[in-house]
Image (cartoon, rainbow, N blue to C red; front, side, top):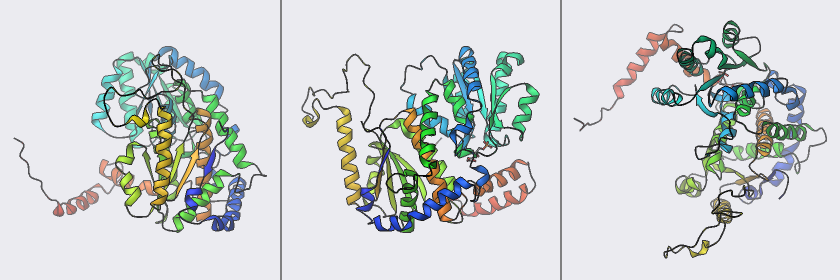
Length: 466
Ligand code: PA5
């Protein structure tokens, strides 16, 4: 097994000969890297995530508190939205999903505060009755609507169920060090609180207590995750690492921007296991919120193969040629623990003629590898520039390494495009309308009349019900 992350862009070059442009442009990426490290670029006040070793002040307390949580809780609800939950969920889902029977003696994690769905809220409240839960509420600002609403609902649930003294022992906060409503609430109520550093923005915060506390509670090897991210930070920040052969984040940033300039406006992160679904969501948030600025930016999407080869696969192969694919792939799979299987999962012969004798006794891993190879070739033939991130294995270490590399590429690529990859002014628009409608600020009646004006174009559907 090759013990490093690799980025293969051969099948970008096969579709769009790009090598010359990459080498001509590369010095701009080296400059942008310097700017990022020197703190000379836009949003430089949010680059505290660059040095992973600076983010570990609370690690010892996280370990102690997570042990305490495990001792009295068999479920923990993580309340947060955007960067305040999706990184932790990505890792949790990669190693513990609905099919995992063995929760390694750690509490089961549930997620809330990332939506406003009543159905989902009611389901959660019902299922929590079967557990002895705690909650971790994560919000840097402390004023985000969705987590605030769910914090009210779930803290009231704990107070009613356990009484105020015990409820207070079951509520944990992760928020800004000094500023913000949640910090004040934690102090007033005596909840244990952890810090999101002021100089780290939400979507770059998975390496802080935002990611580390939930993952420690879930029993993930957080040390390995930190070690992977730390190694990536050393590789990305190294003063001697400026090579287009060796600096993965710079090459990736350059490839993305060059493809974008040639009309490839949509990037799809293609994973090869349902376990990486939430990682795709994390990546979309990172890239989408960072890149989509001033009427420009790649639209990030994600798919899981081979599942989506039977749906969006048609568009990849034959739709408008605006799409490039970034695969995240690993040949390394875990060895099988099931007594029916020795070593790798082998496909048995069929009792019938299913016309699939070609897979007799082959490992599932082997079959997937052929599907992977066939896909990247077919897509390249279909003029989809295709690059492949190959991980030695899907492990906390290598996901930590890969996630940090994505953050670095996202920041550098943004600087070269002349945007601020650390702000998100666009997400305010819906909030301002919603606050007016909720009465948090003025202007509600004007918004309502604008909505009503739109109704003249409503088409009323037929109903045969009743
Ligand atoms: O990347 C970001 O900054 C956002 O996605 C935030 O993480 C998200 O809006 C949640 O914000 P907060 O942690 O303040 O509740």
